[in-house]
Image: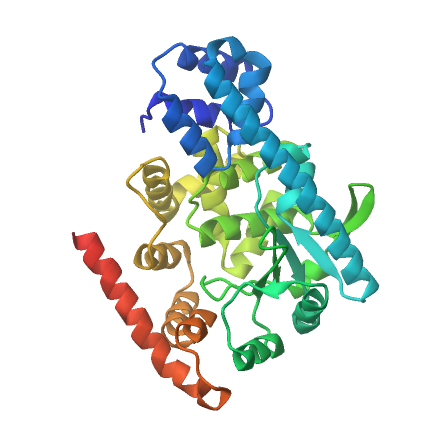
Length: 389
């Protein structure tokens, strides 16, 4: 699939290490006619400002207009400063969880920036993700509230009490939204696949992060989780694909046969193959022969990759709508029972969105089981009409 030169330039720069071929291609692209406004906008949307600036500054600054270089520099420094601020907050939270006897695993965000990119400033993130065990989710939420965090939800007092008593995952913010934390235990209510996290916890290890030892998932489990996260969001951003490419660069000793078997047992073999194939397709990431062969043999992986590719850099494409997302979710799910369970849960299981839209006293919470399918039917109908038009 052909790209405009700005897209090719972004994809060449979406990595920490440039090959001689990348260097030559970037030089050739920079000497062509370039829409710099589009380039910077797309780099921002896809979380690639740090990597774009890194490579242009180091090797090609003479080919970049000074105002563009200055703009990228300002955005690079702003991202780096925010990353340092959020990392300090993460370390405080991990210490708080540890002293409270709650095992917690930092996920994505700062830990990926350091472990995969080798530099806190080279990955964009806007929030902190912490995974706890299901039995600790209520304590974790209460602990955050005790530290001045607030729910990132508009709930009545009764709804908030019900939320805190539940095992629902949630967003918390502090300092007028400057710090956003998602506490989760692994369940994905808006996605067909919910892996059993007990084996993940048994394979946890510790590694050094910012001079502290923190819990971390095994490399194989992390790769599965990154693939699930990308699929859950329909791979809307290139930096999520870049995460997989950098993972492949850093982790050379993966037991691919065992990983494919594990993914198959969890029902997410197609999810894993799609993520890896996108890294190969978009960023020319080398894949083991058996992985490439398996991904090319799965027609659904191929068609989903084309679908992702087509919408990545189109200005007219806004966020993925609920109908398109649901169809994507069904197609990336390989087991029929998982699809049925997803459809039933999506259709009839109330969500916090229902709580926010229709505040009810706790005695009438049962009405949410009627409100949810009606609200969802309206949203699907609206999305369908938009697609027709």
